[in-house]
Image (cartoon, rainbow, N blue to C red; front, side, top):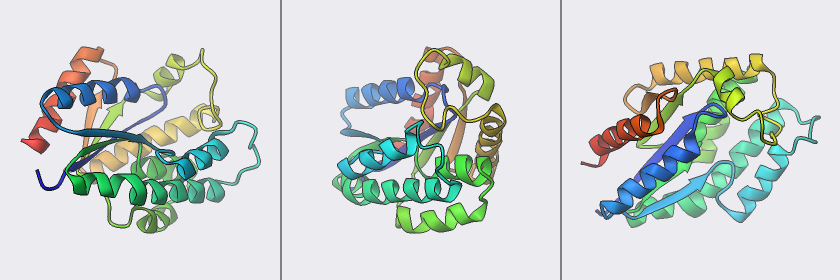
Length: 205
């Protein structure tokens, strides 16, 4: 395999991305693929420091545009330092969130619209996912799942905000049906994993 694949996972908070990413990694490695996991914001020393600033629940004065630009900055770093080199090596890169998160959370959730996409054109530098798995889950169910853990600044946002984010994800799935594949995340873990395996199998067959 001369060139690898770039797969992203999207979904609201509590949708089960971490669990399914780990399952997919194990499934692909059993088949002999080299898999690299990364996350957003994060994945590099610089991006992880930006992540701390974005998610710090004490940063209540952060403006929506500052938030958007910080996400884009973290993204630009992980694209250049991690994602692009790994795909060129022939690895399968699985990223927990990517540019669709900015579109859902900032363009739709914060109401910043097309400005978010314009900013991120520079951040992604032409590096877009080959496949995006969207774990669809009613936002209230997602928030119920994480209510007993310490929540970050984004998770602490209003239920109305999380509803807008969910609607944003559905709009993105409709807009990019060839790339974004939705999976019902209210199902059991095994059922979800099997569906994701089938979707990914179509990509790398």
